[in-house]
Length: 236
Image (cartoon, rainbow, N blue to C red):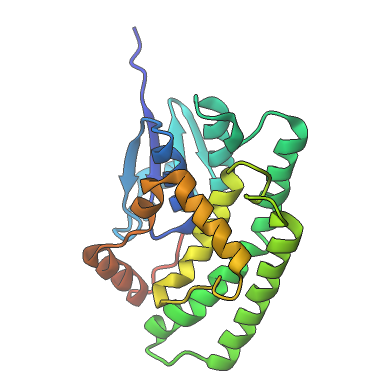
């Protein structure tokens, strides 16, 4: 009888999309083998390049099936594995709401939150310079506009972005909006409605949220080393 390989995922928890995948896996107890190593340069090895020629994480290997891109991985896991249906609903209209947000996410929440993180954390470390406050203020204004839309277009008066239950859309969004916290900035400070949403997401996934976002002194050191060596972030 042929040996069945377990689910394998290649992640780095310094990556926002990787944290979203990690939370879904852990809070639903999906058995898998984790491979961590972006800061160690594992994503640039010949072996990893065979899995993803773009050299990005996350990457998932399920038996002989390899999948890249966090959005696709989250939806595949939610569709294939025996986890609560609310993560990626089967009902067409509810599923379409999740797809609607995740399509919007990659040109709005993700780049605008990441820009603040890049300007306030990465650029000063990589260039040994001070934060350009004028440019940062512009990025913060753009992010605030995105957060206003996140409230008015998606959250509205419902508990989660796509309805009454948490979905993979909430994981992608919350992990992205946590990234600027690396500099001590809470981008939701002026958005109490989104603060309450973030608290609901944390409560819904329990310890998985803390596990994904806690960075030990050692991990923080690896993060700084990765930035000062000017490695490009390979995550999607």
